[in-house]
Every structure is written in C-alpha cells, then in structure tokens.
Image 1 (cartoon, protein in one colour):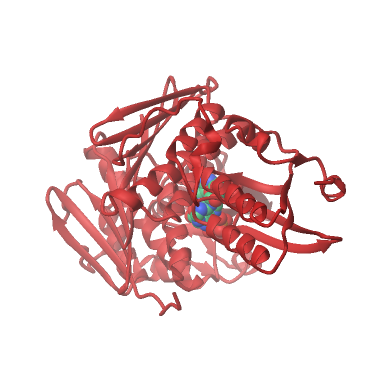
Image 2 (cartoon, rainbow over the protein chains, first blue to last red; image 1 turned 135 degrees about the vertical axis):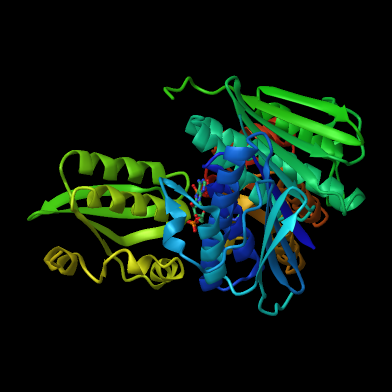
Length: 140
Length: 140
Length: 113
Length: 113
Ligand SMILES: Nc1ncnc2c1ncn2[C@@H]1O[C@H](COP(=O)(O)OP(=O)(O)O)[C@@H](O)[C@H]1O
Ligand SMILES: Nc1ncnc2c1ncn2[C@@H]1O[C@H](COP(=O)(O)OP(=O)(O)O)[C@@H](O)[C@H]1O
C-alpha cells in the first residue's frame, strides 16, 4: 500500500506543494486526467481551508495531508486542528463572504460540489476532509 | 519557519515525490539553480538509500523527509529506520558493488562527495542524513 | 502555474485578464490589483477568467471583495468565464446570482449596467 | 523525467543511449535492458549517458552489474559522459578506475579493448 503523508506548516505556498504531490500520486496511480484535475482542485481547496484555519488558530501545528493508494482506490485526507464550524448547510452562502475573509463553510460547499465521494468529519481537535476516487483496474 | 515533512512508504516511486517536493521548496526559498540541482541530486540519493533499506528491513515503517527553511538556510533531513552500517570509510569502494544490490555505504560516499555541508548521524533505530545549504539574503 | 494579471481600458470599462492559479498564495496579488484599480477611479471592471487554471474559495472571496468595492462607487464587476469547472464553483456557492457572468469580453463590455 | 532507452549497433559494438533519470524506480528497466542485450549476444556495450539527468547509487549498481555480465563473456562496457556532476560521482565512488569513460560515442566505438 503506497502512502504519502505530508505535514505542512501553515504557509500559503505549501498549498501548492500539496497539490503537486497529490497530482503526482494521482497520475502515477493511473487516475484519468479529468479526475486528476478534480483531485488537484479539491485537494487545493481543502488545503487552502486548513492552512487558513491553522494560520489563524494554530500557527505552530502542521496541517496533515494523507494520500493513500490501495486496491479500492485513491484516498486523500486533509486533517486540520482548526475550530469546528457549523456544517456547511445550504443557507445564504452569499452572507458568508464578509469582509475579505472567506467563511470556511464556503470551502466545504465547494468541496461538496466538486467531489462525489467526500466525507467531512469532526476529529480530535479539528476536522478531517476525506476525498476518494476509484482507480481503473490495472494490469500490474 | 516554513517546514514540510514527508512520510513515505518505502516504494521506489516515492523517491521521485521527495525530489519533487525538495526542488519546489528549494526554488521557492530562492536557492540558486545550480544548488537546486545539487539538492535534487543529494535528496534523491539519500531517499534511494533510505527507501531501499526500509523496503528490505522495515517495509511498514515510513521514511521521513524534512525540509526546513529558516533564516540560516535550507535544511533537508532524511531519516531512516534501517540497520546502521559501518561508516562509509574510503576503502575499497569497488568491493561494495556485490551482486545487483548496492551497499548503502556507496550512497553515503556519493552524498559526501556531492554536498559540502552534510551530517550523517546514528539516531534512534536508524540513521539521519542532514544536508544544508545557505540561502542568499532576501529582500522580504 | 503562477498568477498573471494584465489590465487595459475598453471605453469606460477596465478589463483585467487573469491567468494561472488563484489560490491562498496568489489571491493577495489579485486583491491588491483590484484595490489599486478602484483607488485609481476604475469602477467598471470586467475580469476575464478564461485563462484561470485554478480558483479556490480564497479567490472567490477576493472577487466578492472587489465587487463590494466597486459597488460602493456605483460601479460594476462582470466576469468572463466559459470554463465548466469554474462556472460550477460559482453555481455551488450561489455566486452566479451575485456576479454577471459573460461568455466573452466583448459581451461583458457591451453589457449595460 | 522518466527513463528513456534506445540501442543500435555500430560495427561490433552495441550503443545504448540512456536519457532521463536513473534512480531506484527506473534502474530495474536499465538492468533488464542490459541483461537482454547480453543474453542476445551483445558483449561489447557503449552506454551513452549524455542525456542522463539523474543517477543515483542504484544506477551505479546496475552499470557495475552490466560490466560484470559482459566481462563474463570477455566483453566490454564503455561509458560516454562529459557531464561534470556524473563524472564526479564516478570519481567519488572509485568507478572511474572500473569503467573506461569517453567523451563521445565515436571515441568509445573506436577504442580497442
Ligand atoms: N514548482 C512547483 N512548486 C509548487 N507547486 C507546483 C510547482 N509546479 C507545479 N506546482 C503545482 O502542482 C500542481 C500540478 O501542476 P501541473 O502544472 O499540473 O504539473 P505539471 O506542469 O508538472 O504537469 C499545480 O496546482 C501547481 O500549482
Ligand atoms: N509528476 C511527477 N511525479 C513525480 N516526480 C516528478 C514529477 N515531475 C517531476 N518529478 C521529479 O521532480 C524533480 C524535479 O523535476 P523538474 O523536472 O526539475 O521539475 P520541473 O520540470 O517542474 O521544473 C525530478 O527529479 C523529477 O523526477
């Protein structure tokens, strides 16, 4: 089972490193190009959210990103230690754009719209966003 | 302080992920191109060695790679949990190429030749290879 | 891969051509650009997103922030976008109701407020 | 970025042109190529490393392994390499004494054993 774990101090540029690693893993795992792009987009969104939360609330704690490839597919987890906001809900999203800061719920809404197989769970001290993609059967 | 930690299951392709992350971090940190290439080369060698050791001796334990940027420079650490061989020594290196497997000491010799600022230390249950590069002063 | 920003004037509109990735790392540059334009008296903006390769919620926040700024001057902020993935994000977040979205710069420039 | 391998015959020599990265991931392909060539009776190899962008100790091990195989048939394995970084690695590991290293394929092909 091939796994990569990234622990990133909460700086904006690390979001790009995470995308880079996710894209490399997805390509190698044989995910079709369109889904590689979906993964890049969703992983980027999830990390943006986590890095912003840590930068504000837990600057010394790294954001964890897990990429795991097994026979059932490719799993990406973004694990933060930020405050657990209320669930995304589909109320008045426009109201969530207050000031220049974006409410983290916008992020969760975007993620839910981008990826079919997504789980957002409250975990010890924060939130875990789990994204999954099935992999095409391989000849290896 | 910007840090990235990678934990890689010991599969050969992860060595490329480590190079990718190292190169991205080095470029972003402003390391001159020539040294970025040196870092790519040395990080690749150190990870090759660690991944091969883990694959043989600790297949369930991840190899750890740390990239840390601070005011004094860029530090890369590759931390393995493999058996601690005798130090590289400069004896009969040719004899170290037995069978198709390469003695890990060849790797340490290569590293020592590639990088000026290198520390190889026995750590809990394995070896840590620490590589350092000074960073040019920045205007940030 | 990085963010590129260019702007030009077309009649009373200012067209901002954005390329590359708008993420938590690059969004501050876009925010600054929009603030600069508004401070310089450009209240009718057209943001061309056709060359955008990534957009996260930080980027959405910056666009909403830009909209608020031009509105404070009775201005407008129109988007040019035909990329399905980006349109989807605007839809998911309800922002299609907030931004006029056009299929071309010409269309956006011709639109009356 | 990946490994590329091509081979051709020049007189009684077989030239293997290697490009890209020889690392713990790709080295098995190079090993297989060398084994195949020797199994097919090619005992005089010239390995052109000019397009190699990365070489780690796993790759060195594969080259040494190839050398042992051709030697078992009284053959030869010559390298073509002018890249300073790679030459340095051969020097550090003492392998400059083991492999004849040439500045061009022509020179390597013309060399007598
Ligand atoms: N040098 C780099 N450092 C950090 N992130 C990068 C770098 N290069 C690419 N990326 C990020 O990785 C992701 C995938 O990049 P992409 O352009 O698809 O890779 P490639 O051009 O190698 O095919 C993008 O979101 C991009 O921001
Ligand atoms: N998609 C990828 N997956 C894994 N590793 C990669 C990928 N792309 C590049 N690398 C590795 O990263 C390192 C740096 O790549 P490089 O070619 O310098 O990057 P770039 O072409 O983006 O400038 C190389 O050693 C290469 O093996």
